[in-house]
Image 1 (cartoon, rainbow, N blue to C red):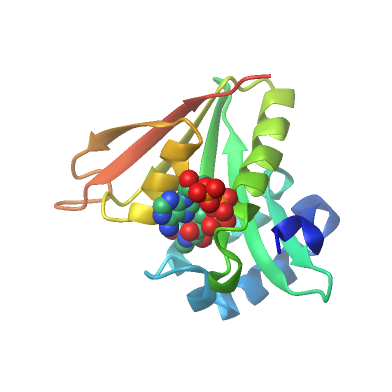
Image 2: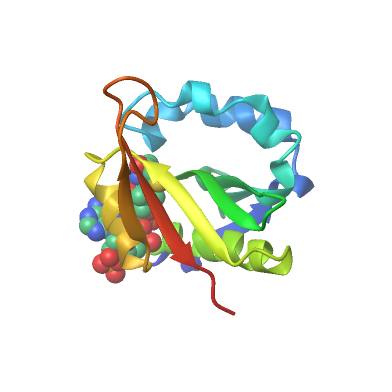
Length: 156
Ligand SMILES: CC(C)(COP(=O)(O)OP(=O)(O)OC[C@H]1O[C@@H](n2cnc3c(N)ncnc32)[C@H](O)[C@@H]1OP(=O)(O)O)[C@@H](O)C(=O)NCCC(=O)NCCS
């Protein structure tokens, strides 16, 4: 089954951002292998929620989400992207990114960036498959905490 069979994407602007954030944090370990709770600051849901989308199954379950923002210099920053563990490799991550790309393009962005841990092979493979190039940013998240910055041109 592909995700399209039963999954709808809904912009956070149409949802109660506070309630969605609480649900996603409660289900955190279905979406993430490391603790990303501090990255789910309310500002990404309340102030920047207009750039985010939730993937919902036909029976109303949260199965994926994307959060991000477009900056004043037209850089689309993809802050968090996650697909629930039982829904991976069905094309849902790709679909969420396309949703974000379309909004970013409409907002004037021409480049999208995401940041990940170098050891997160799934995330690196995912972004590379979408055409991103990677460069290492040593100590980006603190001493000894290197990150990969993944950059991709947005095409119409
Ligand atoms: C990274 C993540 C969002 C990918 O979501 P997904 O829905 O499984 O991705 P898709 O099914 O759309 O995959 C698209 C392509 O990316 C690549 N890809 C995705 N996951 C991969 C993996 N684990 N290993 C290798 N390639 C992978 C493949 O080329 C895939 O195409 P294919 O399935 O036709 O081969 C998902 O693994 C996830 O939620 N991981 C935990 C959260 C996380 O680390 N997020 C960081 C994102 S910056």
